[in-house]
Image (cartoon, rainbow, N blue to C red):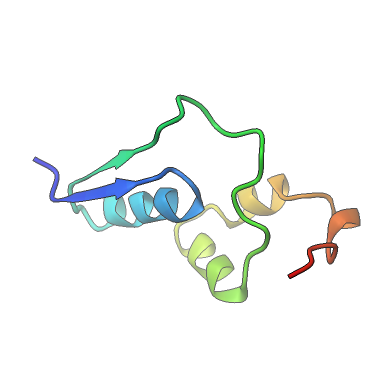
Length: 77
């Protein structure tokens, strides 16, 4: 039986699931939608986030699928 419940399959939930899997910790991820969203779930990544992506082997995939460079820096806070 899973010991950890993750609610939400956004960036945080999915990375948490990967990290728990790599550590052999049983878990279950709950997501309300049956497929991926057409809308972005993150507006940017900091250096530590990219380091974690590198450790779990998804850095290149994330960079390949990120928003186009022409949109970089257009996020307002």
